[in-house]
Amino acid sequence: MSEQNQEQLLNEINELKEMVKKLESDIEDIKFFTKRPILDSGTIGTVGGLILGALAIIGIFW
Image 1 (cartoon, helix red, strand yellow):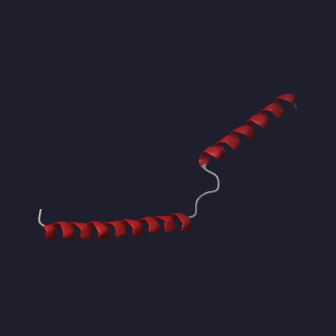
Image 2 (cartoon, rainbow, N blue to C red):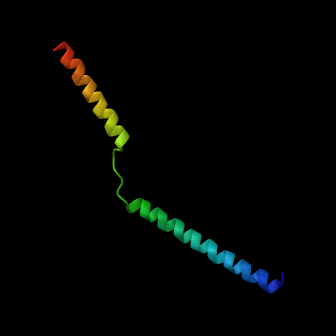
Image 3 (tube, rainbow, N blue to C red):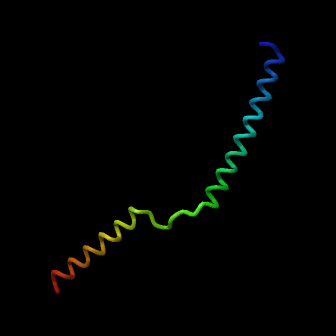
C-alpha cells in the first residue's frame, strides 16, 4: 500500500470519527428533547392489579 493511499485512508478515518461524534451528540440531543412517559405499562399493570386485589379483599370482608 502506498503512502498516499495510507494518508487518504487516515483522512477518511478521521472524517468518519468526526461524523460518529456528531451523530452521538445528535442522539443525545434527541434523547433529551424526546418526551418519555413517566410510567411504563408494566408499572401501570402492577398498580392496577394491586388496586383490583385490594378491592377484592375489601369485597370479601364487606
